[in-house]
Length: 183
Image (cartoon, rainbow, N blue to C red; front, side, top):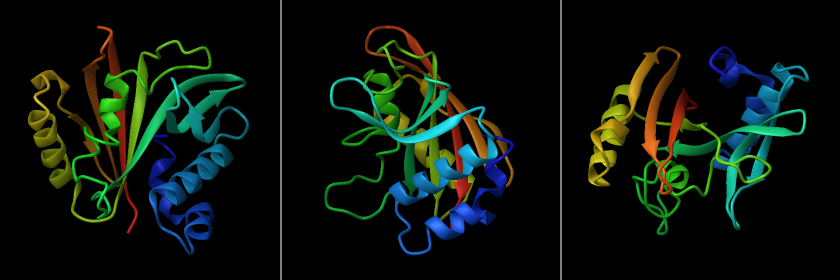
């Protein structure tokens, strides 16, 4: 993902799939098609994968029939909607990171917890530094441990960050964050 994501927004998949609608679902569809095409049969990126109970994660990554990585997607800033809060990347109704913490996301085909997962942000406004500060503030607002704040791996054409979180069952999950400008 780290190698291919910088070219995503100039791809035919991005341009064609987002020609009319530019919401989170369309961005994720374009991303899945793009990444599956780039991975040339090694990996399949699939939209809307079943997780625990009735939960679905935005993107599942398969190697053969093995679901080995799940990704929750968010648009930054959160679209204005009466049902959505600006901090949903982290917590609240639709909270991305929180879904991994609650063990609703981040399981394989057999409901076993995966040690790692991902978040992808489709950044429409502001820069990576702004979102880094805002998201870490939301982690504080959620009263989570300081160790759960995002750490920068690099900011370039895309942003790559990481974070570690305590799950409700006591295990930890490492999250890889990938941010890409889409406007």
